[in-house]
Image (cartoon, rainbow, N blue to C red):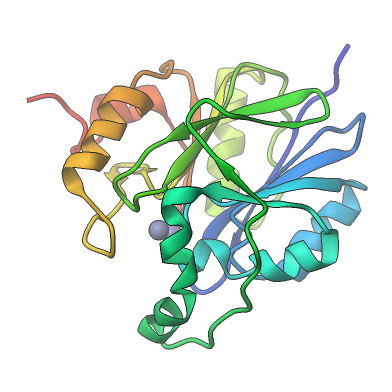
Length: 241
Ligand SMILES: [Zn+2]
Ligand SMILES: [Zn+2]
């Protein structure tokens, strides 16, 4: 029997971006999604599970999601993957830093561009890339179909505790979505920053995100976890009419 997916979530940095570490406990292969900051904490979790990083994926290139990209790439040697439409935004990391009043993080080269329908694989697991423009032009979500999942094991965050109570309620085999800043519990991503578009994000949400099964566990880029069904029902931005 295949062992459970390792899914550790740690909110990192000043804006508490939810960084995901997704690992296969058998092959010890892993991917890291949105290493926004606090690379040492990310490395500690990788060491704890003896994981080798095969890829580093950015859901989009706002500074709070890519601040630790260069350093994690340097240390692990893993390729950096993102959607091409967010490359321009990534190139302006220094302006983003200035806007937030923080030092500009180191930049790295992008090794591969992800497109709608691509798969990112590690061990026995794989995630499908869903291009969800709107928050930024190259925003993407990662969708993992049903599989065995472990309870998120960090006890220090609201996201992790909501995630683990969700997993207890809904069993441990449901699909999951790493949503970046496209969908939040009770809200959606802002569209007033560079490259943002309200019509685009609404189209992404209605035609792609809401097309996923209700039981899909959703880990947003910030804040608590949720589920597609719950958002379909009660998210004020998504209700029909
Ligand atoms: Zn963002
Ligand atoms: Zn963010």
